[in-house]
Length: 515
Image 1 (cartoon, rainbow, N blue to C red):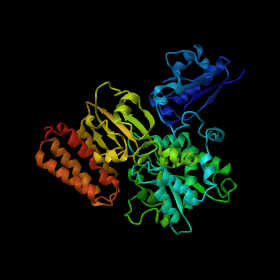
Image 2: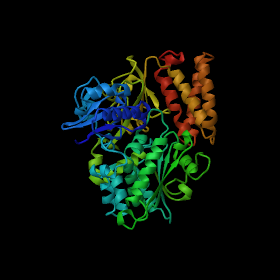
Image 3: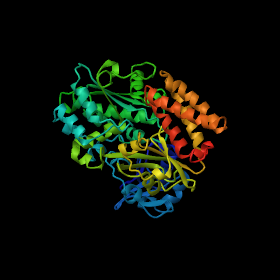
Image 4: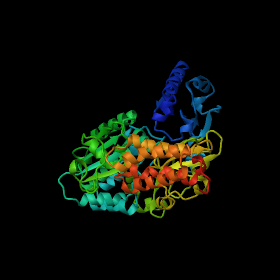
């Protein structure tokens, strides 16, 4: 009898809610009943409200069940789990679920389908095709393709990736580096982790293409310490890829070398800033460097360095595979391609949604997210991590693209979206932003180090109605100093959540709406 394939995600989010226990229960109960199963730990679909999600391969496709607890398994097996028969936990054909079907998955096209460390799975779903194309091209043709695609840095800065690559390629140096910033520290974000754990060869392929474009021979991936599983999986993926010849001294027999290492951070939020990350990689304390010089000219160990985040590198193989025109035909204006929006906070259906730029918050939070988990009305939505703006309902229909958000004083950042219901205290959240900055500041510049500390004190005085209006003026002045005087985005972006809360939700500060 042929074994029936059963898929259960090995993603950290699934494991955190009991996926390992569900796997053990399926294996044990099927063995006890003499049922042959092949248990596959696949990558996650990103539908985290359904985790642990169990998928069964059938003649018509994968039938899903979720969320499944270990205690549910005996009854599910008895009711025909392996045949894809109905059960209260059954959600039907997974590929037909509206949450997935309405997405435009380019970067995340393999997520939930493949086994993360299987080279054959990766290759059978288009893996290494982009690298193969790059190996036939001159370096300037590679970075030009990326430049023509309009790909911009997905870490938050949105700087054109092709310009970075061209700058490093044209720099004169015997040694150049490619560094991936995988220090995904923003609240409500997890897309980088999903790639590292669920599709690691995609990042390896993207970084190798970048190395060929820039003339680099050594790469590093800086992974946050809170991602132990990602570090383990990605390290194993490097070992397997090197053994198979996709990286190493002779990439696929081309005579071109590229070595890759994974490095674990130590838990500092500010090391998500690229120059602080470089300091950490060099074995120093993670503090921000002054610019210039730019890392593209004097980066890691003073050498020209390509620095991008996980999602930027992960978008590159498809661009080389399908061409720049294919990629830039997704999106709007200068915001080309897709972004992995990550729904979190007080939301009914939290998870990853990959769509072309131009979608709105209202569509994401309500059509995909299903509104709040509490059932109460949404009050504010924070976009762009803990230092992103809080947006009121009047701004939920602004298209999600870099320029449109800049016009309303907001940022897309890494694509994190955190919903808050009507019980949220925006004054308290604004205070938290200042406190967070004070705790996480590297301390190098005064506006960030001292400004955030004073910010906490000023917000406290506003809330306690101690000279409220003069203190509001002082808070605005302080925010202006932080925006214009800080060395990096840590200090210059902290005012975004503070001012947006103050401007759009003044009543939470004890102010009249017109104040």
